[in-house]
Image 1 (cartoon, chains in turn red, brown):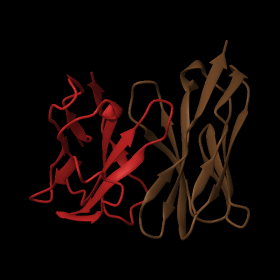
Image 2 (image 1 turned 90 degrees about the horizontal axis):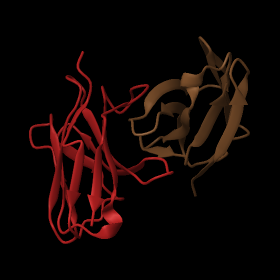
Image 3 (image 1 turned 90 degrees about the vertical axis):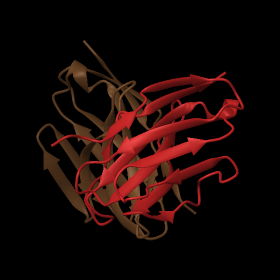
Image 4 (image 1 turned 60 degrees about the vertical axis):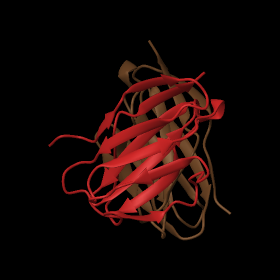
Length: 114
Length: 109
């Protein structure tokens, strides 16, 4: 079974530029999470999807961040415009359902904003 | 409010036993998870406790006391490859995961 796939793995941009991250969850997993992890910290939830519905986006900075999961499978997280403080690792995770015993993480995208 | 506390860093010797503690305060507890994260890699699932008691899985065990808001991860027969960060995470009834900052474990030869 393939794991959670994310791309790109690394991204370096200048501030005020846009950036997008892509995630393909494990096949059959209905719940998808986007997290941000700063150095030396634990992951912080940005948004959670149940199929194509965003059910928890309370931590998503909506002035510059957006996300979509149009067909309930893969998902895109966008930042526009990026700020220096957005430098972090963006992790995507999926689980079979919200009741599942665990979530599985992708390798992450390391974003550096210069 | 919600809060998860775990030590920032621990050091242990190869072959030894180490216990990593986690205390939490949360509304609507729905399970506690431990993840291992090697530097530059994604977290990987280690264990899950939803009822009080000890869950054993090979060299790793995890304990939960819901009344005390306390959990620990026990690693036996430490190996060099166990050097990593260990993340404690609480799942709320809203199905949201709250992660601690992680405990960086260094295993010395």
